[in-house]
Length: 335
Image (tube, rainbow, N blue to C red; front, side, top):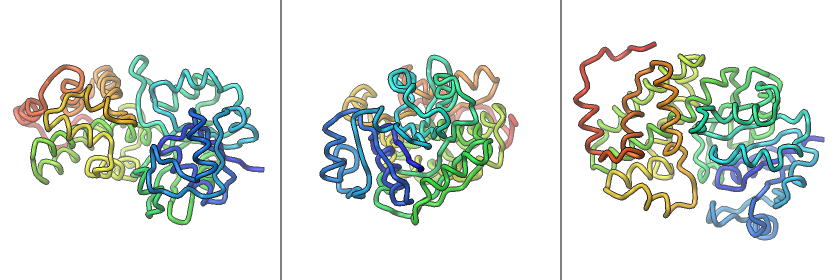
């Protein structure tokens, strides 16, 4: 018998769990706080993360990770990249031995410069191909409202990718498979950093031409890094590349764009983070992504500027000036 366990009851974990139920999968959501699990079970809501959304009656929830994982053949990891290793140390031993692991993590560990799937496979000492990466233009609130959307399930293991495809392919949510896990994961991480820059441009009052330039040149950075790390350039023309980048850079529902916008308007990063109950992955991941780029000799000027703003005290307006004053280059280089 199949069962999906979604480990993490934030906005995306909850939305993912409800889509699995809508796809016909028995699904249990693990919520770290008992009161959240209780609300999901009895009220069929998760107002702290998805206000005004009615969750399906069939979505189970529990604060007990062992109970959530029991009998699962698909285990979805829906926790932030910061702390995933500690979480797996607490309950990873309860994951069934051949369960397909699904990473929803769109970030890079700052200390080790590892992508989410690498942290998962190394923490659990399992075959890296057992981890399927899901990424795409999937703003959690829109998915929870059952608005049409699409995503990518990526793994070199075709059968595991297809199992995940089946598990979450709800009537309104289309899932494509892709063997290029590296490219999909790079896209999911880098787009958050570029969205911070896009938000800064909006907060500074710049127009649509500026936004288009940030998105397009951000895509160039994504492709350069992704190809160098072994990704397929075609992946970045798809849902997990330009699709996710456009959604995250332009939507007011995007956490990273929102943080960038508030930085552009002059708020401090500490005050912005203190006011949010969700994680903007790009803030921390930006340093690790820049570290990967520098180690590989890949030019990522927008990423470098975002790091300088978030972690070096640079004003967003100075970031823009610095980018505009760079030496002239051909549009396509570094591949």
